[in-house]
Length: 133
Image (cartoon, rainbow, N blue to C red; front, side, top):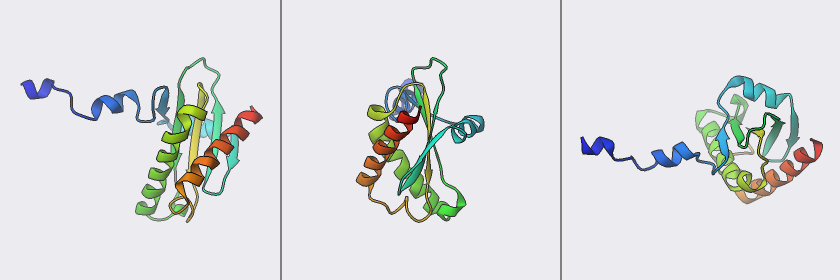
């Protein structure tokens, strides 16, 4: 019984949000569709969509998507892992509370593009999207 009561390593971190304090994941299709109708900015390695929710929430949310144009399941998963890492590095400092962000992978680019360049691209894209709001 004592083993069941002890917390499993990693579960506490996942409960807090793996992207940092104040950053949650987008999970529902309507949220992705609202972001698709909102502000957008393309970069070399990915496409960014941003939606100011204006609901008074103090958290920002982020979602990731890669279509079959990106490649097979292995290529899509690799691209999404890279997008998640870029978001983990940049969004806690550059993102705004109350916004939804969707990062969309690009075919044959996202999985192979330089990670540091993608971080700089996300910072640039965020500045452009925020300036449009």
